[in-house]
Image (cartoon, rainbow, N blue to C red):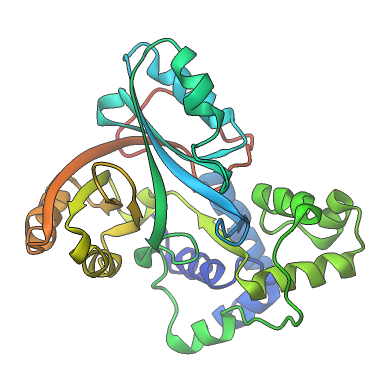
Amino acid sequence: MLDDLDRALIHALHLDGRAPFSRIAEVLGVSAQTVARRYRRLRTEAGLRVVGLADPDRAGRAQWLVRLTATARSAQDIAGALVRRPDTSWVKLTSGGTEITAVIHAPAVDASPGSLLLHDVPRTGGITAVSAHCLLHTYLGGPANWRRSARALDERQQAALEYRENAEGVRQPGPEDAELLAALERDGRAGQGELARATGWSPTTVARRMAELRASGALFFDVEVDAGLFGVRTRALLWLSVRPADLEQVAVALAGHDELAFVAATTGRTNLVAQALCRDPADLHRYLTRRLGALREIDTLETSPVLRTLKAASPALTAGHRVAPARRGG
C-alpha cells in the first residue's frame, strides 16, 4: 500500500502532471531529491506514469468503445493485438476473460471506428461477437481524475500546485503538433530537451506550444497508477440504459460517485457506460444495490467484471505493455 508521501505525490501530479519536483517538494515539506526518488520508485513498483493526451473533441477525433467476445483460447491473442495498435487505449479483459473492451481513436469525420471493425476484426479467428459504441460525452474521466486517488492534499497545498493557464493567442492542435503529442503520450514528464529533439523545435518553442495547448484545453495530463494500491480489488464496467429525458441527470449524479472512475454517454443498446473501482465484491454489491438501485431512472444494468487492464489511458506503447495471463484485480 501507499504511505502519506506517496499519496501526496500522486495527488500533486493529478493537479499538474509537469510540476517540477522542486515545487512539489516545497509544498510537501520535503527535499526535491526525496520527491524524485519516490517518483522513480512509484514508476517501478506501482506503474505510475504521467501521460499527455490530446482532448479528442479539439483534436478532431472520435472515440469508440468496442466490445469483442471471443473464445477462451483466442482472447489473449486478440487482446495483445489490440494493445499493440497505436490507435487504442484502455484495453481490458472482462467477463471471465472471454470479452475484450478497448477504446479506439479515429478521425471524427469517419462514420466508423476505423478499419478495426470493417476489415481487421471480421477476419480474425475466434471472435464470436462485436459491438461498437461511440463515446458521445464524457462526464467523468480524462482531465477529471478518480477522486479517491486525489485526496491527500489540503486546500492550501492544492492551490499552490494546481496548474494555471498563462498562454495567449491559443490555437487548436494541428498536424505540426503530431510529434509533440506523440512524445507526451509516451512520457508526459519528458524534459524540454527530449521534446525538442522529438519535434525538431527549440526548447523555447516547445514550452510555448505546450502552454498554448494546455491553455486551450486541447492537451491535458493524466496519471496512470495501479488502483490496487488504493485498496481496489474489484473492478467492473457498468453498461446502463436510461431514458433519454433522464440521461443528463443520471450521468451527472454518477459523476459524483466516489466508486466510479469513468462515466460517459454512448450510442448503442445501452446509453451510459461507467467503470466502478471497489474494495471487494461485497463493496461492489452494496454500490449496485444501494446507490445505483436508488436511481429509479435506470432501466437496465449489465455488469462486466474487469479481470485485467492491459493498456491504460495512453495509446503509446511502453516496455510495460505485455499481455500476461488474466488475474483478478489486475
